[in-house]
Length: 114
Length: 113
Image 1 (cartoon, rainbow over the protein chains, first blue to last red):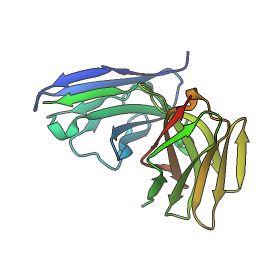
Image 2: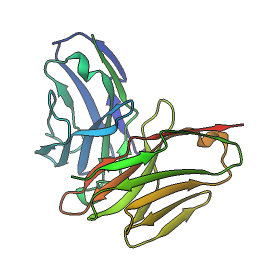
Image 3: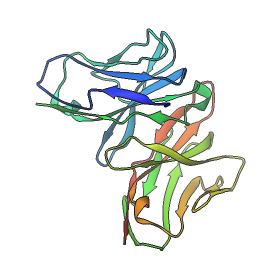
Image 4: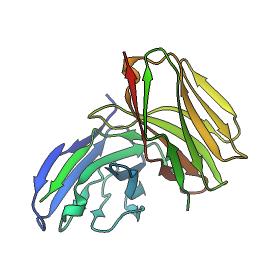
């Protein structure tokens, strides 16, 4: 089954404790992206990757890091989480950057930073 | 950059009635407009899209219209059913080597049985 898998789905952590949200897709997609969803703000892009070893900032990159060492994986790293990073996070992928609007989304990861 | 406004933020309709969600965009270079449906506890799912060279597209009970001159596009759902209850997001994609995706703020649709 074609899918985008995120882990963990739910996480409660404390300020400053580094965490990683993993994302993996099994569709051989070139393009991957991370979004955060907040009430009244919709989906805002954090980082994206057009292919292996190619990443770039989205609209709200502050406080986040990513890496793309393999085509299928695109982890989101919060080096020192803060309460304003409490949010619902989605990883998404598409076949290639020219089709960046035709996204397949994961199920989401709800993060709470205390 | 692109800015997408979406209205209304919430919408309640009786089962069987129609629902319309509207979005406006700011950058005339945007050329692709997808709509996503997000059910409770799930990720958004692409349900229909339209490109700038087309004025209207239908898929069973859903349709999307695009007015390039006015820079707005709309999602129309006819004969609504309870399973249509969800949050709907519009998006606009700027053409170019990298297709920047800008989402609207979402519309929570409730279909009352």
